[in-house]
Length: 77
Image (tube, rainbow, N blue to C red; front, side, top):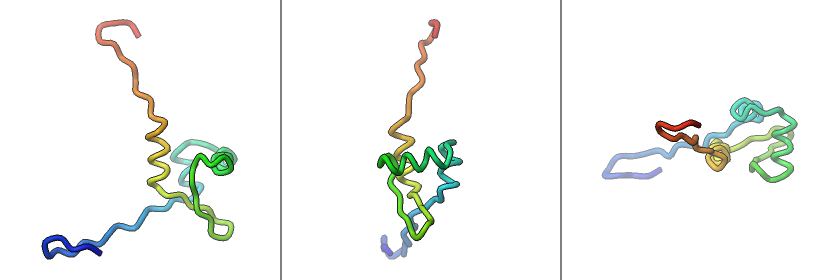
């Protein structure tokens, strides 16, 4: 917990996602997601047989693969 000018602020817990959540977000199969884990592309945590991903890691992965659209005003594409 942090205090700012006498106001108590509670830190937001980190958001964790399941494999199903990540598959839906990235629109990939469970096998592809497993491949990403095996190759170290996306970090994860495992408790027993359940695997979790930090939402911030998935957002970073998407940001790193962002491709800007190319557009020329008044010209052909």
